[in-house]
Length: 180
Image 1 (cartoon, rainbow, N blue to C red):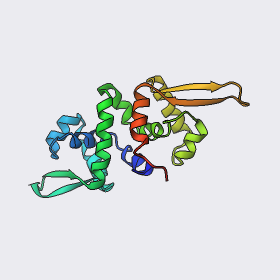
Image 2 (cartoon, rainbow, N blue to C red; image 1 turned 90 degrees about the vertical axis):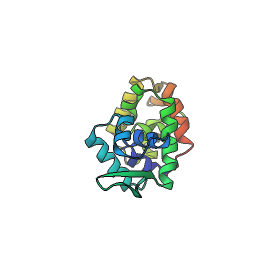
Image 3 (cartoon, rainbow, N blue to C red; image 1 turned 120 degrees about the vertical axis):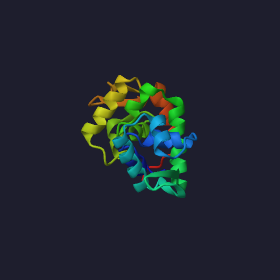
């Protein structure tokens, strides 16, 4: 999976939980997916449209009512859903609000080894300094990222490392994602 695709997927809050639910066998209709994810109808509909636009989901031809269609994963969608399901397997329900934020997964992908702020920024050219800083702070507050200051360097520089749940998720996704 390309890092740009990961950024695009995580731009919708409920995309990863929907993919995980489909991967784990939840039927591809609205009611079962809503029950499995807990998303609101509006957020769910927006996420489904986004997943179709990204080429990860498609309407299952010949199945479902026109107003209540059934969806299925595409080939690319199955690959991404497998990653989403692995992440779901190592995370808790209280982790999902942080995982649903736009830049959490892309930033964790870059932290499979200790990195400086500028190195993370180089791997994620679309992220702003502010968004990266906020993402790192929110993950640090959740104990997913450890920030250490390199005092010997001039000027002193921060080194970020994924730890605890963040480290586990980072290892899962870093082997699956490529940087373009």
